[in-house]
Image 1: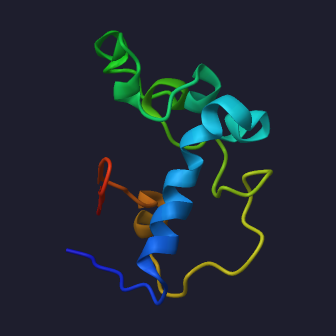
Image 2: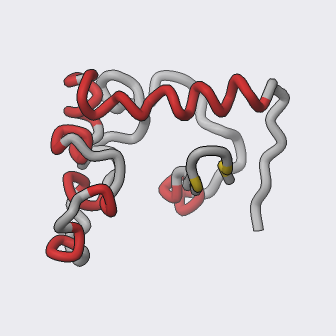
Length: 106
């Protein structure tokens, strides 16, 4: 189990997270980095026909960054130091958000 304590105002963090709900329809540059956004979707299950693509791990169907991208920077490349001590598998794992709108975030 991994937990992270963030030294910030949780309300601001939550607003910033929810602020991106408009990303698929507004930010074309971000859609090139996160292919599923280019389909107007935030997540796999937002697609009414998601079951047809359930076994397709391509980012335009499963979510996540495009092939070759490592970060959410404009070009998908790392531009600063990475967290010290992370093993390659830990870096590859990225992050997972779980939400139950309108008010729960894990």
